[in-house]
Length: 233
Image (cartoon, rainbow, N blue to C red):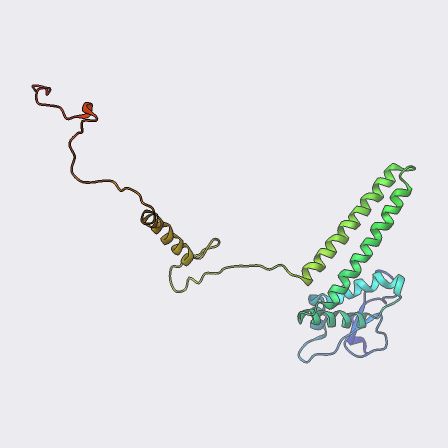
């Protein structure tokens, strides 16, 4: 590894120090991110692509946070692992993401149990501390529930029914709800023809539209007015 192929910066053994990037194969994979040279791209462009992709920076953040428990993890191997997992997600293979969400749900549930235990221990000694720890416990419980809901949504995505209209061929009617137009038309025809069917099935007297008949003797007060009773004018 030559000096021209390495980005200037201090070693990465301590916290807060910057990682180094090299484009040739080297021995130190923990503090140096090894990259393969690409034809037509400069060393600065390769670094810019890494930063734009976001995998290298997140790998460096993960490396710093897991160091107290897992030691000095190789930065180059971490980037390679994240890239492989990202390619699997691009292929719609969500197995790694599902395992991560499940593990996070379990960890958050463990946080809830521990915070609730500390809250109960301080309940009769320090009410303020008990309240603070109980709030933290409920937050962890809520985050665990949301993680499980996210995992369930990935495994069983909700079905979305949408209707689209193609207006390229002229004016069209868009029905966002209810029955289709054909069913609506058939229902309208049935409702219009139903009264005539009822009249045919039942013995109903129809209105007589013929000439007026003479008044009968049963109702003499309804008889027509005679000539003598008419007004002079």
